[in-house]
Length: 195
Image 1 (cartoon, rainbow, N blue to C red):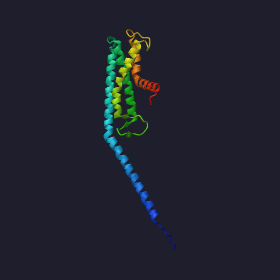
Image 2 (cartoon, rainbow, N blue to C red):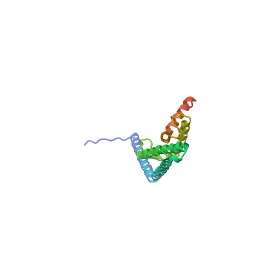
Image 3 (tube, rainbow, N blue to C red):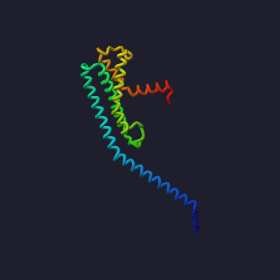
Image 4 (cartoon, helix red, strand yellow):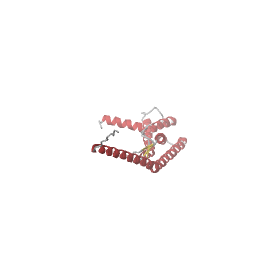
């Protein structure tokens, strides 16, 4: 009878225990990831859902109020029509952005994303403040349109007779105010060579 001799030296034993330790470490990391995901889903996700609903309801209230005020625009001076329209356009943009982000998923304060990493833009509590404050940028848009029209820089519109043009330009300016501010920042940065 032939016996096969198995020889195990100390090096083989060390390799075995090293592999065993690495596998145990990977298993512990997987458990931690699952626990973190469970914590996110159980604790942070309900808070994010609450914040998103708060943002949606607040923006809808701003939009409805703006529409009601614009329906009464004949009693307002053109200055206020520009302001209300700018805020309304900016509120619409914030609402669309918040809807888009919440449709993509959720992001916690420490950067955990649910359900997955892509797409990047997800709803987070940090963004909720921006969505709620974004209609204020519409004030700036309304002012830009009003003074642009008054100085005949924006359109050849008589501010006292043509409210439809005032509303149109102010809504568009409010809707795109973030883009306008980004472009103005880029222009100023390039003019003054700011890095």
